[in-house]
Image (tube, rainbow, N blue to C red):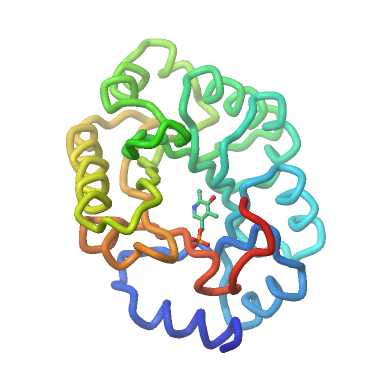
Length: 223
Ligand SMILES: *Cc1c(COP(=O)(O)O)cnc(C)c1O
């Protein structure tokens, strides 16, 4: 099946409150353009160099999401255009995003990444660390970022019971934090679910799914 029909199959099955991020990492401009022509406007990438190159080549009404692990020294390359940064897992990174956003007189929306997987390889913080950041005085000095929710990645496993538990952990984190509201903290996004598990993620409360291979086909290399 082609990209446009894959997209249509997915979007037509999504509840209204769920946003689809089409994960285009490793895929060529021609593939992304096919998704764009089919109406998709939100794309996710996990490498800074790739998101910058694709931003430059693609139409400017696209929302670009950075979904990968982000190094502080690379924030500056995408600060002028990135719409949402999913994987913020420490305060120093948030501070750097704020600093770079300020240079462009913009507010960059961010999600705090919570570690829900049992694997060591997945990044993220605990709910308590997230809560400590949000309630710190330094956080309130960040006027050019807005934290709009949480992101998590489940363990790579076939055990759906475990995945469900991990998704529920993220939903609980979100519920614990959502009563807090500051000018720069307005939680309404739960970013969880990928090609293999987005339906389960939605049942567990996801409002934003990040889907790559089910739209664009398998990637050529593990990324
Ligand atoms: C690659 C990636 C995805 C999409 O994975 P698929 O299984 O191809 O849907 C989602 N989230 C993150 C953080 C990724 O790096």
